[in-house]
Image 1: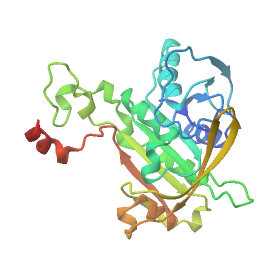
Image 2: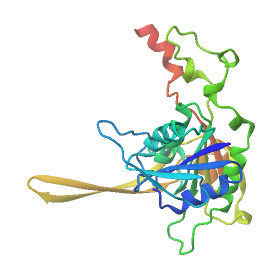
Image 3: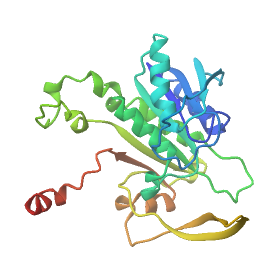
Length: 280
């Protein structure tokens, strides 16, 4: 079993090393991570210029490379780089992110973007994040996040690559002369978020949907001269809505549950398809 591990916090991040250590119990780990911090890069990729690749080493990983690109670049190029070396990946993991990726934050997350790229490449994928409480002086506790990553990698869902499935076995494939039914296949993308607590203080694990992630936001203007202005953006998350933990990953995490949310990259709003077809 060959596992590609990426992240958005950069090749030096402790969470990346912790994820590689954990997944080495499951298979051979190959790292492809950004050279520098790439948080909130979402699913962006680099176009119009070459991406530099530097060989490096990282703990128990069989091999590791650092790229001057985005998290999605690291997955896209990492799969190709190792394939050219005769190593076919079986799954992709991103993380362990230093900070939660809950609710609508997943739209900004480079960690989730990396996992989504893995799915687009036809591989079962997971994003793993630790809800680090930055006010704490103690070191982050990665143990349970590591445990859930290993459990995910051993799920039956992760034992078949979408790219290897027989089209006849696909559930409800959509007919298309262009062969673009790939988006309808049973892709696997899991979003795992774990509170930064000892395992005995966790409330358990909840499989919960994404929910709205509300922020108290600050935009601080600045002057740079020559008629150039700037804004520094920051914010603090709030708990919005009256939901039960089973109905909201944000609420469940705030109640000290580790959350698991299955994601997909088809953003179609199917509720509006028929209405819009009547209009056009």
